[in-house]
Length: 114
Image: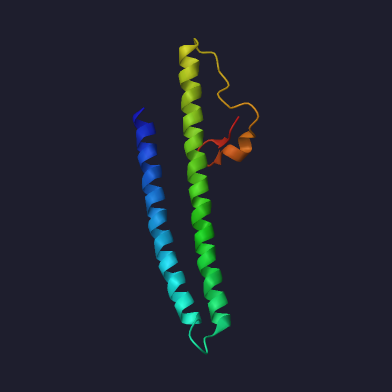
């Protein structure tokens, strides 16, 4: 149970750090917009910098998605272990009906949900 709490704290801290990165990226975007609004600004440079900022944001979103899927794995694995412990050792399918496991979890720690 302590490991679940630690993982929860890690996920929240990771999310908080990503939000700080997002806020910095937004400040850079605002500065970029102020610069491009000036007469004679270089639109090619603007597009290049905007594309780079969007890539940083995309990577951040992807990292958060991986982290949240990893959290889902932890919960499902823990629920499965608890269910097996309370049913005399028989495995219990803790997945929700109708979901596609590989869309919910494909983390490095546990691989695709099964």
